[in-house]
Image (cartoon, rainbow, N blue to C red; front, side):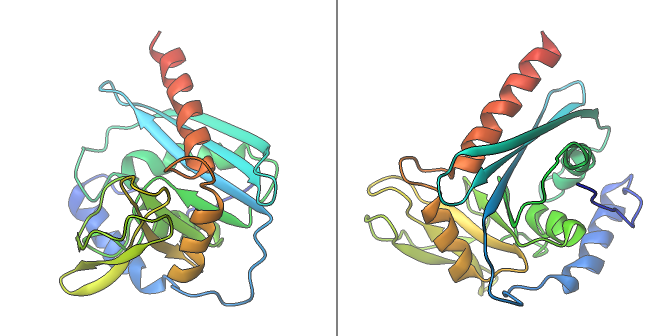
Length: 225
């Protein structure tokens, strides 16, 4: 699968912030057409202190949750660790992983933020724009303020940054800490949360995220052995 990147990768934090500010106006937080999500891809990345980066993509069948295909890539980065700019450490290797993917997913789920980001342009927004595919972020922690949702699975509350609603704290398992869902691109928040619930029949995190995370950990272990 080819994902074009029309912009050169920033070399500094200031350049990366400028790129996020320029691109965020292109994000579409709605479904332009009635979506049919048959193949859903989960993305995850990991890196070590030496600048080695690994990226994994796991594609599942939306109905059966069976794994359809996986793709991985290894790379390096010298971009500094800056909160809010982690995408620039991970995106180049993630795009390499997409090059090794033989199918085109209908939906991409990232282990990261989308609009729930200080500049409303997290990793999920960036990869969504580059791929032109509906994308959402499911993060383990919130960037913003929220009230604790009800204890039952499916309960949710708004996440706000500077008073603006940017996502939802969603309870995927009863009496378990919620996940934090936000739009990446070409999807609305109601649809995004419904998809996350469909991918969490047993665990807090979507199956796509769990499998991509496991594959990333395996790759990083092999790389640093």
